[in-house]
Length: 239
Image 1: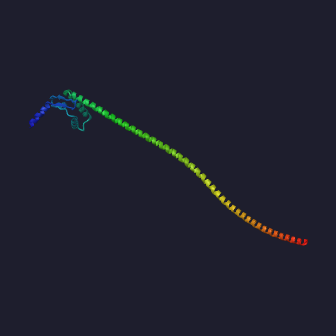
Image 2: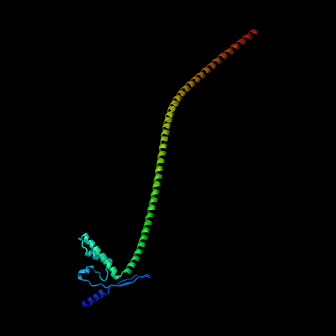
Image 3: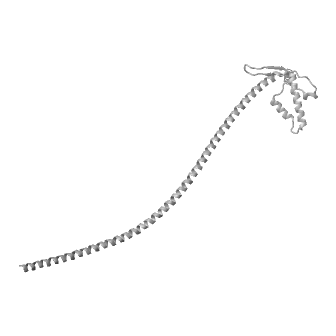
């Protein structure tokens, strides 16, 4: 069992290939045979494995291989070594079709990303325009409300002053009316007294006139009796 597994591993190491397949009419397939050269054990750190690791594997391997306590010089040296390994992979295994495919995908991704960014930018501009319009409407409504409040305040102050003036005038008129009422009451009392005096005087005149008429009637009756007596005497004398 171990022999079979080792044989299979050796065959895989001897004939590694890279296959890239994409579905659809624009499918791209690239098969690149890679024959790694046998190098001494001292230089194995600079060689490339037959099947290049993926991006996640490279990141995990890099994170496992690079300790936390590395200095800046060691990190720079590792970065240079990684660039050299990448150049060897490109040169040795002819991954030009793969790079072209990735460039095409990157172009599409950039276009989609730019389109999404433009759409987001348009949305943000629309939101900003709406916010600015709402703010302008709010500022306009606030300014109109302030103007209306100022106008109403001025009108209220004017009306209050007019009402106070009218109130003072009415109070003065009320005082005048009260004084006139008092004067009229006094005049009425005086008129009543004068009327009573006049009535009494008229009654006295009526009584005096009645007495005079009665005296005149008495005198007239006496004069008639005297004249009758004189006529009788005259008749007797002539008779």
